[in-house]
Length: 261
Image 1 (cartoon, helix red, strand yellow):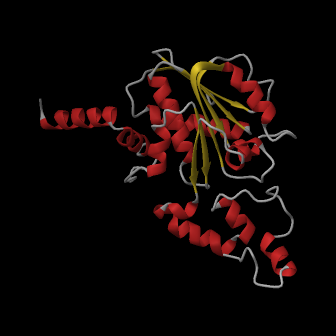
Image 2: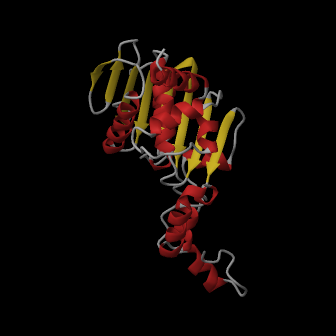
Image 3: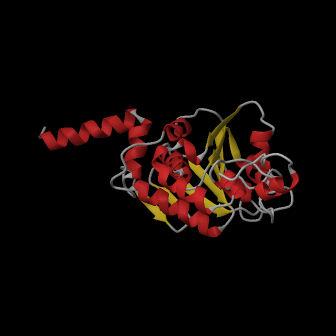
């Protein structure tokens, strides 16, 4: 076997045996100079829990994790349903899955902006989060992106009620989002934790590669927004008109309880 062919074969074996190596290979389809996968991403893609909740700051690679899990299910010939608040988000996650597919030997038989079918029977379907559009499927894997921003007065519960019955008995569901206040179903997963849910919290300050971006946001965002968007804290309803630190400065006789970062 020529050396180049042997090297390619070894790389293929490594990706089959090491989920982190596989995900890094996927990432390099979009970011050629990607050097590594974050530990929290490895924890998420290798989780065996039936319910996984990802509380992740913006631009940390949340959608990369969801796309990787989608690819792994496609390789198994299973069906993945991905739900997101807006159609634009469903197209974006499908585009990412299509990019990652180029790093596999799967044969795509049909692909649209929101659906992918492979020759081994695998399906990836991304739909906007409304009860009318997401009923009628059967899924091995459910992905709920930006769950905290699902529409509805009950904080996304209607959507979850619509999708849970379509999950097979041994299926898995991933809830992922940045925070958007305390009064939604996603917040309850962390503020009122239940058993058998694998919870992963990823503030921006825990990711070294985001250090410069975090500092820029620290300078430009209000304290409340920084705590919500970067530190992944559940604050009020997520939409307060006044900055929380300003309120505390005005009402506390001592230093602000929540100082501006």
